[in-house]
Length: 513
Ligand SMILES: O=C(O)c1cc2cc(O)c(O)cc2[nH]1
Image (cartoon, rainbow, N blue to C red; front, side, top):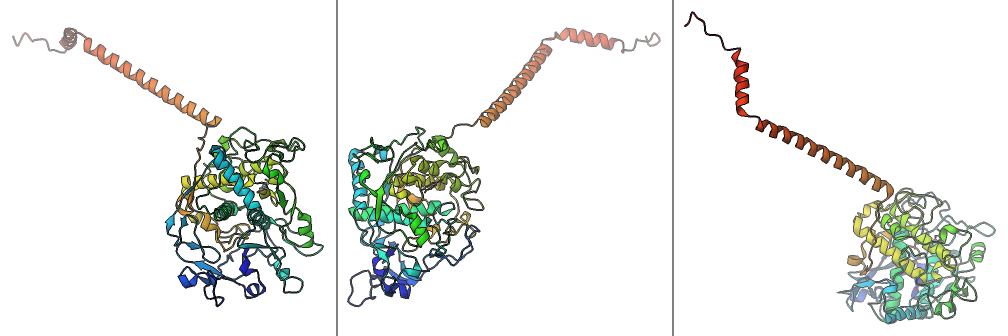
């Protein structure tokens, strides 16, 4: 959420988060790397357009008009520079001057070599155990952020992976309305609206960047899990990948996997909601996962099919009013999984991304916890690959992304909560290969014909055949007639004519003779 340098009474009181880039004698003399022309400290631009009717407690939530409740000045970086102090490069650029273009390829986890798979697992393990070098998390709402004495900022260190978990939790947490009052749950800055795809795209980019920095390898790429193979099993749930099922407790991960040792963040959701606190970096119990094991909901005991992927990519509109989880004919609501794969909204349906989450049936199936299960990363890279393929095929103009009246947090120019420095939804509404420095290696399924289409094609083919036969028969009859005409003996014709005409020839008059 916020850079360590800005988690101070002074920065919060001034509302300014513009850290120096290089260590300086006079604090503030290299804010945003201004001495080397990398950036400058500017006023934050926050979206103030109206949001949809789902949220009606304006004024009560720190995430409104993000990040203005905390800071109103931030770094704006020049050229390809980026980051909280302009010390980094924009996605897709590298080198000391950020002028070298880089492209990385996100590949299917199952297509990686053993060496590549192990490297990915080691990176996750290291990230789970390495304190984030730059970022700290708030453990209290803005009202209480300076602590009981007004001089003790309520922030904590968090590991790189747990920051990924915490950001997701913070974006979905309920609005606290006061002691003794029920927290309001009809709010979600990262789901059930157009920002679902842009938010999760940035969430992954940020983790990928953090892992690249940790590994000092700008070419490290996150892999993906193709959850729509039609096989209905978690094919990555093996001990050499994301962990098999434990033999001792079917809802746990096998002891042979490193992930059986992982402990989850943000479990105490009832406490946060009743006390008005915020999840901190304290870990709790193990990851729970029971793929296809939800006997109470047979509908989520299966995974999506390749056909579902092919169908959703044909939905032509990005999103449709009310830009919510009941939108119909919306690509976003279809890939998110609240509509059937052809785009029709149906409250009883769970498909694609949602179905993959619910199939996991455990930590990965609950929004406030799901990134604790590292399968989340792979499930979302595949969802992002679908988004990118849709952008490539439909080449939409940004004007189709709603500027206003989307649920709070989902308008085009809303800064995505709780990322820092501020980044708006529209910045992620671009094709990844040319703009964000990565691409996907995926073989997309082609769509099988539906029954109605097969019937239509059969009828049209039959009609064409009948027309051809009719035309051919007509030609043959005509040809026969012509042929018959040609073979009539000429003399007969003449005789006929003469004899026919004979009667009309006047008989010579004797008088004339
Ligand atoms: O019930 C759903 O459709 C559902 C569960 C779930 C969990 C999760 O982490 C998500 O990101 C989405 C989601 N949808």
